[in-house]
Image (cartoon, rainbow, N blue to C red; front, side):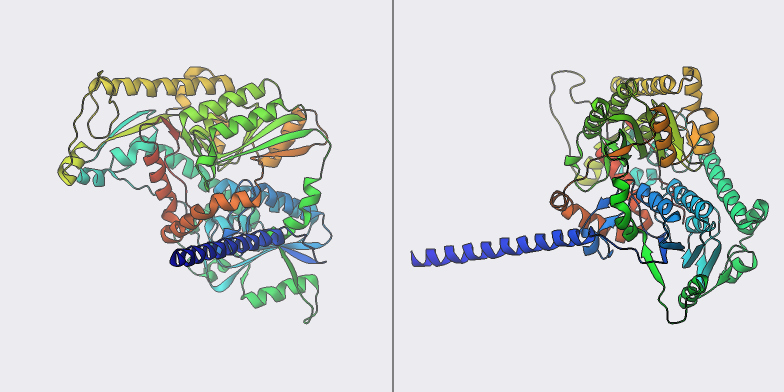
Length: 593
């Protein structure tokens, strides 16, 4: 008995100590979150630092585990926060100018376009200086920073100026070696999402569409730099084609940048712009801290006035609720149906702006979201703002809007569907020595099991389903865009379009960012003042901590290990998880250094 009591008490004490440690750790994290949201003051004569190496989301994310992962911050800013902060800085007497830090930009092309346009607006409105500097500049970073009044690089730095490329990985050879037969069903000759599983190189149709939108992106890139730097577009194309930008000195000689400086020399340059003495301190403030300083005044703007619902839709489109996908940024149909319905029924909400940044996903989930937005449009204006991607399922949930805004380098369209059902019979039998057998009560009872090939009747069944979903998709587009069905089919076939081409062929309405979409919604709703009701609603810190702990640490390790190949890994895992389900999904991500 004595031994039992001593063991019991020791275990109880250990349990109490464990829970106390967990409690204090949790309190420490919460305290850290509280500190990060503490009011920040802006010093007079401060430079607003826009760091192009920082990742952005569509909606601001508070995540304490970013600090644990060594990121040094607990907030990933939303793109709209960044654009709003830059616009506010134009009329803020405490901000003397903007200092753009170059680097390798992890954000998409359309996101970069919105930041660049915000910097141009800042210059036009404020007449304050914009300076840019860095040790290296990716092509996207240089494109953004080319609007600066002066642009400098480390004398031993790197400026990437090599043109655009898309590389795709094809898995058919691997699957053949493993004796795995992907049974592929698709509709649309350009629908290339299944090509990695059935081909060893790009199809002619895929090569045509990829070349077309990449050339659109490239021309827009060169035109923007030529205009900002007062250069000739044809000359810029020649620099790229002949590989003339290899050293920082080459960039100076060709007038792509204004000079070479080390960091200390750049700091002295900024001091001279301010006419500061040698011993006077140069004040800077990061975008994140500046946003904290102004957030209350921005959020309070229009309080008590009618509202516009701003619904952010970023990530893959999935069925069900995001509660089953902790840590992932996804567009979960059940959640979005609920939020759109709330905005539709809320009398204070006079219009809805739907911000879409998605390569697609489940066709059924997209149809559910489309239906709720279709109902909302009957009662109040619905405006869509497209981000880097609004393709396939991302276009499905956008096509019913009263007006669609996008950037020239947005990827959209891809109106097509597919599904993949793998046949692993030979893999199991020859590689693993596993065989299967069973009984059934009807011919189609075991259709789609991966241990046997589909019969001709089963293949016909599935292809009919694919054809039906594709026909429905085209009907949704024809109805929403007021385009004849035959014309929609000619624009569809799974083809991906650049934003510029989408405007020309009628799949979108106007070039513009999220602010333009909000202004359009306000005009349509006859609103002079309004406040924003943002969805998804913010979660409390404790809930986010509990949801994201394991997932964030795992994702951080994968990203660190895989680098630029992480999107390919995500694409493969997404397809694995949806095998046999009809998909409306973009086949790739664009990665431009």
